[in-house]
Length: 176
Ligand code: FES
Ligand code: FES
Image 1 (cartoon, rainbow, N blue to C red):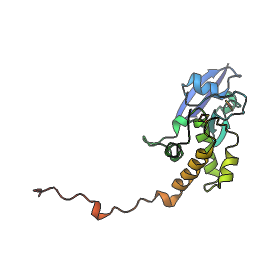
Image 2: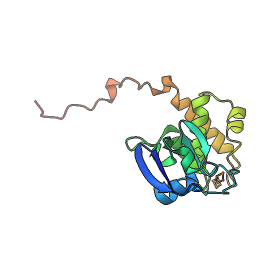
Image 3: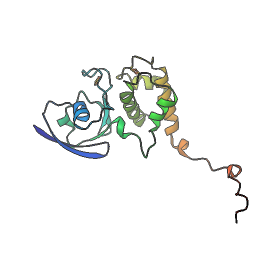
Image 4: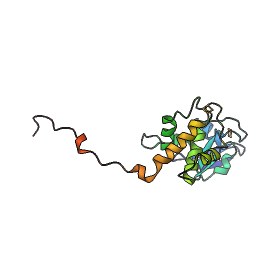
């Protein structure tokens, strides 16, 4: 047995695991993070993609002991204050999933891609996601969603427009 300690979705965990335990097994079976899927177990499909130390990794190709001391973010840690991450929201808005099996890994990979390249071309999105397989969607809406998220994550998109005084509710009658 080996002891591993890592922060997963903002919470620190310490556990004893056999050295052969994969990171994806640790996440799912020890921590109950079943949002991270296992598709192939042979590092082909990308369904198990998580962020480890800010880099996307296929968690079926990493041993839990290799992640010792690291910081892991799974699909379950992306939302903030009850709001979906912009990439999650864009997948929803652009109908970028059907069965949803590939989606957690696809989103984690897309987040990593946009971290490296905030304005990817269609070709760059396709290239960045080539390690993630989807057997349902044909990829078109996934690419569209990633580019939509990219637009919405740009700093200028985050500037809230000033409220229009015409939208202010009229004062209630009789008040004051
Ligand atoms: Fe890890 Fe398929 S389950 S790449
Ligand atoms: Fe079914 Fe991608 S939505 S595998």
